[in-house]
Image (tube, rainbow, N blue to C red; front, side, top):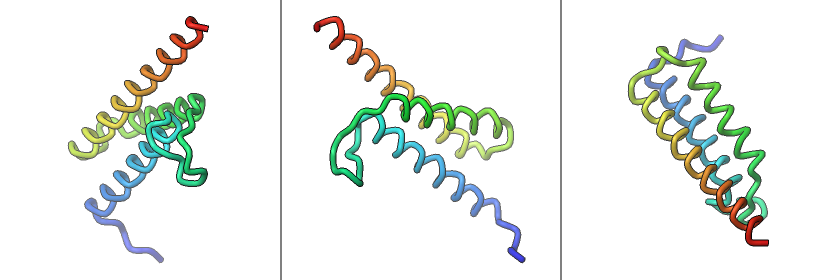
Length: 98
């Protein structure tokens, strides 16, 4: 059987999950190179799914996280949402110019 996880271990695992999803979101937004293709690729649907997943985590863990964990999750969501909106605006501008 596995031993119960300490709160600090749980916090580290939670942050690892959140930061991994942040990296996936930034790759989908074209802010980071895709490590498999070594190319910058924009996939807004995948970015939206990642943002929605993090939003779901935020909703389900509300009032159950340590303050630092909640702060990191909120900051990651804010950062991804702002970058997502930026990419949407770029797409709309390029369509209107065409």
